[in-house]
Length: 236
Ligand code: APR
Image 1: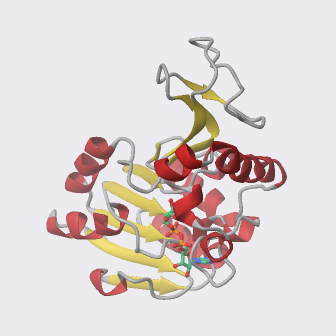
Image 2 (image 1 turned 180 degrees about the horizontal axis):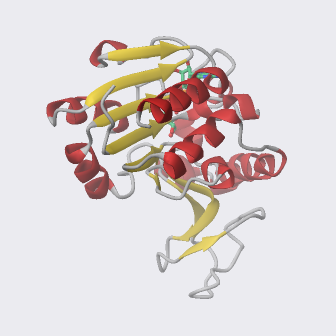
C-alpha cells in the first residue's frame, strides 16, 4: 500500500460506543429515547431551555466516568507514528480523542465540555451543570449560556478548514458513523472527487457504504487498532 501523505479521518458515535457512551441511531440509541426536535434544535432550546440544559447536564456528568478505548488510542498512535499528516474531524462532542492524545482534531459539532454565551459569543471550558441562571464569565450576563454544541439546523464549525482538508486528502477514512447526517455524510464524495482513497470502518455497512472504495466491518476496538498497525507497518 502506498504511504499516504494526508489522511483525514471522520469519526462518529460508534467510536465512543465501547467507552460506554450511547450512539444516536442504534436501536437503544439516544434518539430512540429522546425527541431530537425538543433537545437538539435551537427551537427546542427556545421553547424549554431548562429541559435542554438538563439533557446536556446529564450527558456532561456522564463524561466523568468514561475513558478512551483502544480505537481512540490507535488513532492517537497513528498521528504520532505516521510520517504524513493525520487530521481527525469528529462529530462527537465527548473529549475522548483528546484524552487519548490526539491533537490534530476538529470538533465539527462542538464540545460538551464547553459553554457558549449567546449574548457575547464567548466560549468557556465547562465541566459543571449549566443553566440560564449561570452568568457568562466574560460579559457577566445570565440568560444566554448554552452548551457549545451544534444543533440540527445550525451550521457545523470550521467547515472551510474541513473542505480544504478534504480537497487535499489522499486517504479519507470514516469510522463509527451512520452516514445519515449532512454535511458530514457528504465528505466521502468530496474526498473521492479530489482523488482520495476512501475507506469505511464501522460495525456494519453505513447508509453511505456504497460510496466507499473499501470497508472493514466490526467493533472499533478491534478493527481500528488492526488497521492502524497495518498502515504503520506498510509505511515503514
Ligand atoms: N464499533 C464501530 N461502529 C459502531 C459501534 C462499535 N462498537 N457501535 C455502533 N457503531 C456504528 C453504528 O453501526 C452506526 O453506523 O456507529 C454508527 C453510529 O451512528 P449514529 O448513532 O447515527 O451516530 P453518528 O453517525 O455519529 O451521528 C451523527 O447525528 O445526532 C447527530 O450530532 C449528532 O454527531 C451526531 C450525528
